[in-house]
Length: 395
Image 1 (tube, rainbow, N blue to C red):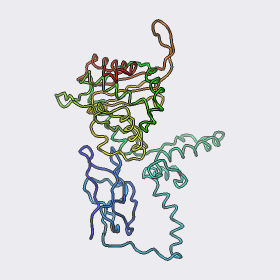
Image 2 (cartoon, rainbow, N blue to C red):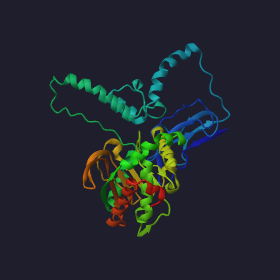
Image 3 (cartoon, one colour):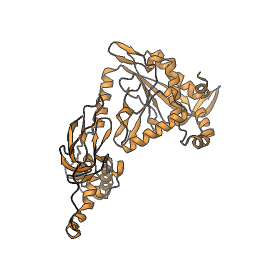
Image 4 (cartoon, rainbow, N blue to C red):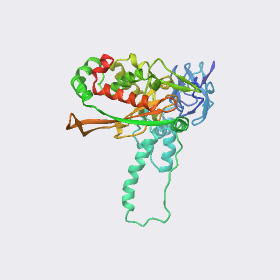
């Protein structure tokens, strides 16, 4: 019986995707639920499994094509069996070519295109993507490394007049979507940012005291993000408008706290959601963040992980940022920016002391959030972090 392989249903905010690379070719046997191809959307990469075991008899949509939900991708004959392999002598040439084909199959389309343009041999690269796939970033790094010695060798040689090399690479769907949303956020929201600083010593001391016991008890490391999530939720409870959103001429106050955590991935920045964060323990939050980080690295974050959210937190300090003005993630109305913790001289009780200080930034939509609420929200976050017992006593 011939059955069809179709594009899975997409979320309301995703209308189409791009086919990456077929993992099976026509005539090959496939097992039930075996992944046939990945579809890159502007949010996640979706895996398309075989609905039944059989033989792939037709590929309808090719690598790189744009597809929509429920579109036919291929056909499988569930009654057929794969053709028997050729005798060893006849198969020898194909076997010799197999490594090169496998190397090419391990490269993402954008990586393969860039490799062809720069002369990088993808077969020699160790891919950083899922299942060892070679990503565009891997090719870029290899090209840069190869260019460095060449540039040094050419330093003493005359450079042809007008030699100004350029490289044109198309945006991935995720990058294009991120660009679109950030531009829309700046155009549609009245974004203003307020700043403060927080003494991280109390949290750092608490973490240092309990991190070993915490990891032994819960099987996950005690980080700093969970404290910021808890502090943010406590502040949002005091100032609900910062947790609200704009819908036309209405302000929608959310009676729940779904906190988005910005996570880096090989494909770009994604913001998975900690749902009902107010009901999560410190351990629950840390486990969820680790889980999302692994999913992001492997390209396995699901659409439902990215949907919704009432407030977001981004940590530029991971990369060394001292201060920034984060952009609101629509339809949310505010976002908290964390930054690098640095020892600085501060005055306490008339004395100059050295403390580990971090700058905090709260960007907010001034259409519904006044400066008073924004400043007090950031102060509430600061106070909770500088006295972590507040988080336990709900103060």
